[in-house]
Image (cartoon, rainbow, N blue to C red; front, side):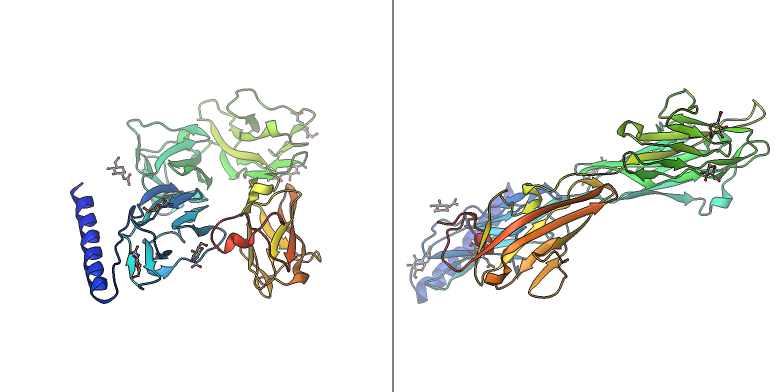
Length: 432
Ligand SMILES: *[C@@H]1O[C@H](CO)[C@@H](O)[C@H](O)[C@H]1NC(C)=O
Ligand SMILES: *[C@@H]1O[C@H](CO)[C@@H](O)[C@H](O)[C@H]1NC(C)=O
Ligand SMILES: *[C@@H]1O[C@H](CO)[C@@H](O)[C@H](O)[C@H]1NC(C)=O
Ligand SMILES: *[C@@H]1O[C@H](CO)[C@@H](O)[C@H](O)[C@H]1NC(C)=O
Ligand SMILES: *[C@@H]1O[C@H](CO)[C@@H](O)[C@H](O)[C@H]1NC(C)=O
Ligand SMILES: *[C@@H]1O[C@H](CO)[C@@H](O)[C@H](O)[C@H]1NC(C)=O
């Protein structure tokens, strides 16, 4: 409270000084920020509005700065009236201090607001499990201590969970979890298997993709020679998991945490060399597969390693995939010589799709020239009448390809624009 009052007072005094100076030379400037832009907590990728206004808007124009650089209007971040809209917060591009600048165009007096920072919550795209102690895998022997680290980056507090062969690990007198580290004391052969982790914070949930395989050795105990690997396949394709043990009389496969052994059937085959082949993969086949090495002796601990089966998919590109959004069946009208800018967001898919733009001639648009792309954005500066046509955003991964065409119409006549503010006012949807 005290702090707010103080900053208000400072802002107020600054205003008074400027007003007083202005009054001596120019006349009667009298305005103060109401409201000042406020810092906010926002999740990376979500939208936010930074609000700004002044007490008296006569002759006043607004602009915004980020760390003293002007904020230019774009598809993702733009000014509407005196407020700044961010449709998809980007933790790299939106970090820093935003200020709202109000200028009296008649008197030339300019005031800067208090700074506002976004507290952006985020979590990285990939996580992995790293061996922390001992530093080398060959130093891992029964009786020693194992420390694994979950490498998942993000803002604020990430809480971590650990899994052994897909089963959640709980703390015990031998196992502790401290922040991002898993400690296991006095290792035994029963600890062998795949260790994975999961990080959770306000921005989401992240599962590790590079996991750690613990392979302690002992005479007579089956020892894994070839680990099954995680696979992503298309629906109806074939998934193969290899699994080779030394000292094992046979290999058994299990699905999920079920105790029923997978036997040869119309779609599942377990070969004598240990490989499991799943054919005509369905969505219901997704999950964790466990390969168990069976020993000749009943007295040795069971050895098991898991791998994930995922089915690739790619969702459609829709009207809402664009920034600013387009309307299906309607032309996107741009005045001649205007700037046209549109971003195509990554459609949801696994693996992450690749995105590109194709021009009216069907050719892929490069990152240089009059019509160019910057990341997933299509940009045309000084739009010419001949730029009219279909521009297609295309996304592709192993599940297939999705396309959506934006019908660009370049108008030589005056048109009415639907979107307020920003250079986006050139994105007009209806001719009048
Ligand atoms: C802006 O300046 C003009 C000319 O000095 C003055 O008449 C007007 O009141 C000022 N506006 C504000 C909001 O102070
Ligand atoms: C900004 O403040 C002025 C004067 O106080 C008010 O008339 C106007 O409606 C406000 N604008 C917004 C967008 O709140
Ligand atoms: C993280 O958690 C600790 C302990 O729970 C807490 O003291 C700290 O304030 C939290 N930090 C953030 C940024 O939330
Ligand atoms: C399963 O089928 C494969 C391939 O036909 C064969 O080699 C293997 O012996 C079969 N396994 C069993 C247990 O019958
Ligand atoms: C095991 O046998 C199958 C069928 O012959 C083959 O596809 C697979 O590659 C073999 N696996 C290994 C690890 O050699
Ligand atoms: C962005 O657009 C707003 C509203 O049209 C305008 O007032 C502002 O000056 C523009 N900013 C820049 C840097 O062009």
